Amino acid sequence: EVQLVESGGGIVQPGGSLRLSCAVSGFTLSSYWMHWVRQAPGKGLVWVSRMNGDGRFTTYADSVKGRFTISRDNAKNTLYLQMNSLRPDDTAVYYCARDSLPGFDSWGQGTLVTVSS
Amino acid sequence: QSVLTQPPSVSAAPGQKVTISCSGSSSNFGNYYVSWYQQLPGTAPKLLIYDNDKRPSGIPDRFSGSKSGTSATLGITGLQTGDEADYYCGTWDSSLSAAVFGGGTKLTVL
Image (tube, rainbow over all chains, first blue to last red):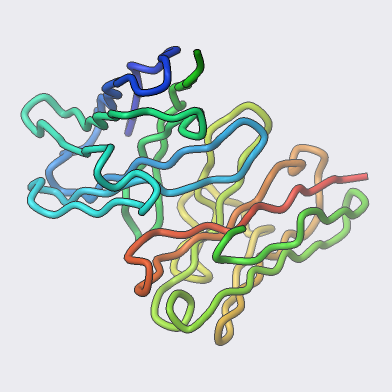
């Protein structure tokens, strides 16, 4: 069974940092593009970043470029999102998602990041 | 606002049919497949349709998708109260070099 489990969310002050993790099981992480998607409270889905299977290719939304870094450790079956210089408008539930079929065919349950003083 | 345009809400009675539209542009729908996602209250999104009109394993054939030019449509027949959810279209945009979603459509089954 394919599973994605995010962790690392929490409350952080503006300007602070957090690292999110997405532990996967049931498939070979290195075979898939992986994405981060976020959803602010009561709002819609917003794509954040993606990385290819071997970790050599990444893309970011303009809103997070230069502040967020996506990475992966295929040996640990884990995807990461390092978030620096956090702002209140980064407050959201962050989902990791597998890119297949094509389409985001598997999603984690999400982890809540709250940026507030 | 979102790159892809969806109506904020639609409603229909149980057993009826509803369609949800999604409008894009040549830089997204013109070049890429559309996907549709269902998000039940308090849960993560779930893939309903991929490649414009294909259903993943386990998705009932009450759900259908189509695409024509720069527009796409999700259809749901035999509406059930359990279909009440937010529905999102999504694709890739070559101009933005980013995945994009519609703003979401809230389905109410009256």
